[in-house]
Length: 443
Image (cartoon, rainbow, N blue to C red; front, top):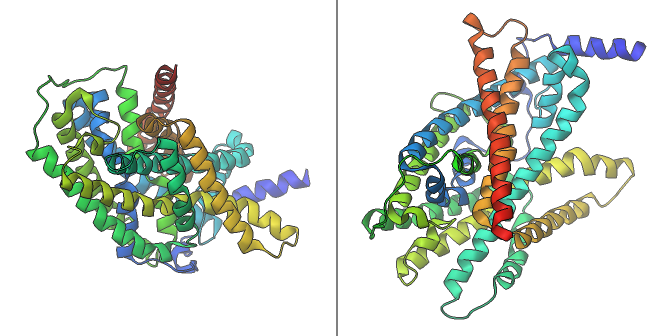
């Protein structure tokens, strides 16, 4: 009984906001990033392999449907990222702590939410961490496949090697870059990666605009049966939710992140516009025959194509370490490190590097087992990001707004419920459709 009473007192104290406490003023971050470095990281995370899969996504949606849906999904995702950051700030104020991880925020949200949910807080935290780790490792698998496929396209004219051999060749370098310890140290690499990405993107756009377009008829409206594949691909491409949280938490001036002309809006508006442009132009260029990466549809014997491939391969190689930062941070700081410290382990740094290397081997093993880049993208986007990018932020805002901060006519509550419904439909429809497509591909 005393334990129950103590838990109830904790819940009450957490549900009382403290307007005098500003979590941002109490943050003590190792190697914080400035606004420009944060924007560079955000662009690098968002303009990855997903953008090159956009033409194939339009194959699953149709040209007009895909163009409209990309803009709508971009707006919804940007809004949900704002909701997530704002809700975490409110929960930090109520908890009186400078910083909360995504999973810790879910714990606090459950505790201040409806009573039936308070006992589920631990399960919600674990589920959030599982989705984050699976999603980020999924990106690692996609990056492995992308680098190996494009390397093979570059090298095959001179010396033919099997695809698994290309996978093995890149394993060592990816392990090396994944051992870089923090975001501050990765910032110069991200600048280089962004420059290379935009060089490669410029060459791709040149071919899409000036190259010979397909003569086959285009599908303008698509089919409802394949739209979930489009939805999963766009979610995967646009939603860098795990890295967004890590970036905001690691900022020197976190208040600049969510301003009207702040890092998040500038980054997401730029990214959505680029995805819209490349998806539409790419589909018009290659029609229904698009590969899962538009780089594979460019003229193989042109020097400019090879420059674009090299630029993208190097950029995605650098980005691998940034994407692995999140699962390393979650698994090491929240689970493994506390247990090792409790046992008196004296070689913590060594074990951290063991974890980094093990995660590289895991992504390598998964990628070489299921070498279907486009389906990987759709699956992880539909399942993980429907939850992380839509359902969880809306749920968190509902709990943070209880009991009476839903605005006129409780519009905020209605809006969050609609977003959660969209997320649930996307999760099940996208997941089932993609799994079925994977089974059909490998049967």
